[in-house]
Amino acid sequence: MNERGVKIDTAYLKKLSQEYHKELSVLEKKIHILAGPYTQGSGEAEFNINSPKQLGDVLFNRLGLKPARQKKTEGGALSTRESELLKMREMHPIIKEILEYREFQKLLSTYIDNLPEMVGKDGRLHAEFLQAGAATGRMASQNPGLQNIPIQTERGRRIRNAFVAEKGNTLLALDYSQIELRVAAILSGDEKLAHIFQAGEDVHTSVAAYVFRVSRDEITKEMRRE
Image 1 (tube, rainbow, N blue to C red):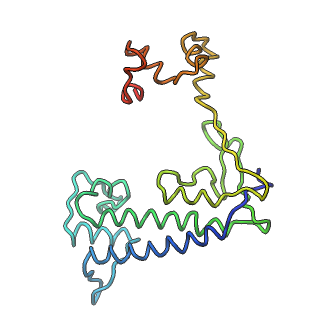
Image 2 (cartoon, helix red, strand yellow):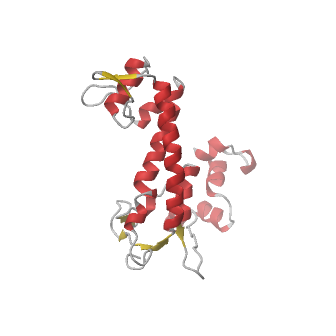
Image 3 (cartoon, rainbow, N blue to C red):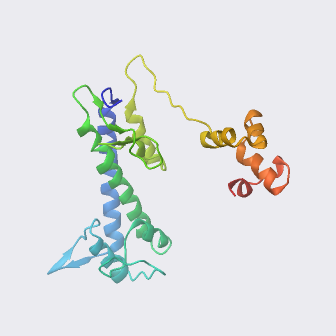
């Protein structure tokens, strides 16, 4: 896998880069408008959205946002980390815009603008796969890490379209279905668990039916999750 690599559609990423940089610029202007004039030194200037200190100054001093249980940095300033901003999402429209801005910026810097630079002369991306790289025993990859390409948002998922098959080939996705639980059923010899898999039932629904002593039709999402 290290040697063969994976083909990357760099033209697609270039187009995506142009689109996302344009949206990033629009968001930057929106944030500066919502923040209002920012005084720095001898006069007014647009604050640096990427500066935690300046961002904190705008949010907590200028806009007067007072979040409850907001964590602080080691230096004692109120934190502007994503997890802390999410707590303030309903407090001011600027928070939503900042979170979007950060998403675009991370996608661009980590993947969209970075991956084409790492493509070899053969047009393929050669990551380094580590057989013993993860504490769980699963394979890991680095330079770049190919197993953390975003999937949570539509913007992130679009990056995955850049991974393509050579002409005449097809990319195939395979995944074991509840492999750890199947192994557990075999090793434990648990007859009920083995029967669930043999019958092709959904394991979590069926186990929940046994635990809550109701029929499988009565199982709710919450019961299944528990």
